Image 1 (spheres, rainbow, N blue to C red):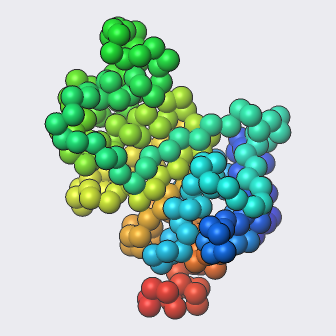
Image 2: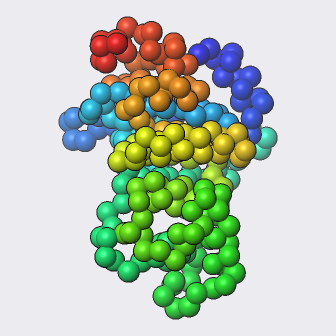
Length: 247
């Protein structure tokens, strides 16, 4: 994908996200090096690569959870202001015991309210959470125990939390692992609606090459560094892709 294409896309949309010369080391081990990546609003960028390629490490670096070399610039195109950017995140899994007495309301409120949720249940907050859950058609889960939700329901609840308040960048780490085929199709439909309706930039890690080819706007192939990036067709025809995946 050319710089001219990227530049014109950034002119059109609300912000640019540039990752410049990013590198991560754990001791003497190089996990990532010389990662340069450019994303913009309204686009689904999917990261693929073999096991141990550094996909989740890349996400953790963007989230600021681990030290890294290089810079990550998230800037509004109109103001150049970096502080206004928000990142939403849905992890690969939540380790929640099935019997733990935490409801969806409790979980959601703990993320967005400064008031301890066990003190009292705010009707205003309850209604706000209900409306956010409604975006993903899981409003009927608001009083259910989190541990009793299906994989698809929990995924939608976590998406609801991740976009409250609405971020500029939404990061999803293997979001459909453990979800059935219908749930996977529903998930990608929802992601497509999110990026279009809210002009969201979405960065997703996935191992499902068929779905990536079908839904991604841009694909990043990494194995410690970026080996190829562009449209799904461009990356899937790349020699590095064929060497890794044998396709």
